[in-house]
Image (cartoon, rainbow, N blue to C red; front, side, top):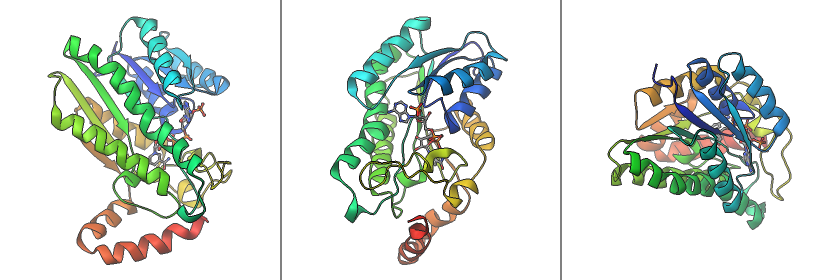
Length: 266
Ligand SMILES: NC(=O)c1ccc[n+]([C@@H]2O[C@H](COP(=O)([O-])OP(=O)(O)OC[C@H]3O[C@@H](n4cnc5c(N)ncnc54)[C@H](OP(=O)(O)O)[C@@H]3O)[C@@H](O)[C@H]2O)c1
C-alpha cells in the first residue's frame, strides 16, 4: 500500500538489489524510474516492471560525476514533475589490499558510493522541504559499520555515507522527510564481478561469499518493509551481524576473524 502511485527513483536499477527493488516496487503499484549506465540491462528490468505497471521509466546516467548526478536528477524530476521516494542504491565495491591500491581507485569508490548519493540528496532536499514530504533510502553496507579486508576504499565510502545520512537524520530539518539507512551483509548479486581491483580494473569473479549470500528477493522485501515502516536503520545480514556484535564486545577477536575470513578472496 505504501508505494502505490508514488513516484520512486531507484539508482543502480540495472542489476542486483536495485533491479529487484524496482520490480517489487512496480508490483506494489509504484511508478518507478530506473537509473544506471547499462541501457540494455535497464530495458530488461523495465520490461519486468511493465508486467505490473505501465508507468515505469528509464533515465540512463553515469552517476560517477557531479554533472552526471545533477543531469540525472533533472531528467528524473522532469518525467513526472515529482519524486516521492529515492533509493540511493548504485554502488561499486573493491577487492584489493590498501597497500597496493591506487589513489585513483579510492576516488572512484568515493565518487559512486559517497558523492553520488550526497549530490542527489542535496539536489532533492529543497524540493522535499518545499513539500514537507519525501523519503530517502540510502543503501550502505555492513562495511559502513566495520572495516573488512580488501575493502578499504569501499568501507571508507560506506562509513562516510552512513555518517552523512545519520547526521541528516539527527538534524531533522524537514518535518515530513524520512530517511532509511540500509546496511546489508553479503547479498547474492554480481557486485564482486564489478568490484574494482588495485588499478581500477574489474575483479571479474563471483566470490564464494557473494554466491552464498542472502537472495536479492529476501533482501529487497526486507528493505521495502523497513521503508514502508519508516525505519531509521536496518541491517540485513547473517554472520556479519554476529561479527558486528563481536566487534563491539570482543574487539580483539573481531580483528582476528575479519583478517582470517576476509583475505580468502584475494
Ligand atoms: N551485494 C552485496 O553483498 C551488498 C552488500 C552490501 C551493500 N551492497 C550495496 O547494495 C547496492 C547495490 O549493489 P548490488 O549488490 O546490487 O550490486 P550490482 O548488482 O553490481 O549493482 C550495482 C548497480 O550500481 C550501478 N552503478 C554502478 N556504477 C554506476 C555509475 N557510475 N553510474 C550509475 N550507476 C552505477 C550499476 O549499474 P550500471 O552498471 O548499469 O551502471 C548497477 O545497477 C550497492 O550500493 C552496494 O554497495 C551490496
